Length: 213
Image (cartoon, rainbow, N blue to C red; front, side):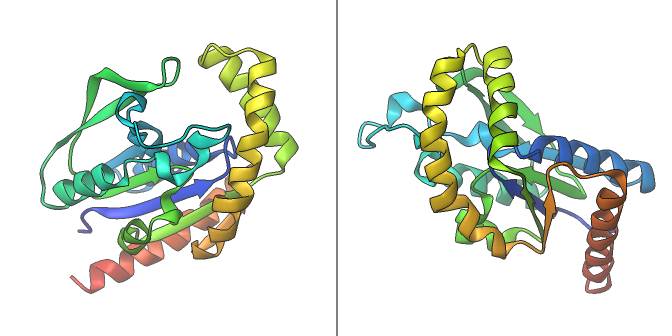
């Protein structure tokens, strides 16, 4: 049976990465109940702002790969591959720092990573067994971000719109150019048929990996 098979889901802000990850995990569990599946969000691997004395903050910094603690993410993935549970930080988006609580993630047959900058890091790209990039129109992503940040992160409309100018520049600079690293590119308004097709491609890759065990 496959162990620690890594699926990476990337795309722009509010493109549908988290929703896709959850739906994919549910589909895998429904079709293969014996497989354990875990989801890890790259959003929990922001550096703690209080420790970043040598980084200049600007509009869009949180959409720049420099703000990510990919070293910690890679270390946690290595621990999981060795069969060890890990304690991952929980990022506080209201205060822009790591919270006091930790989330325990146990080793699993399949681990789904989702986040903006997964494909910006060469070491992560090399580790991920199947990569999905989610595309969605800028206007739709902005609309979704307004709803999320106002309702979940205590922001007001003016601040979200102001920050999004930097978000858009960072997407064009860092995120969109590396979508070619994905095994498949899909849309953020995906339907069940699209999800099923991608699941089958992943299952084929898993079968291939199992045949080489």
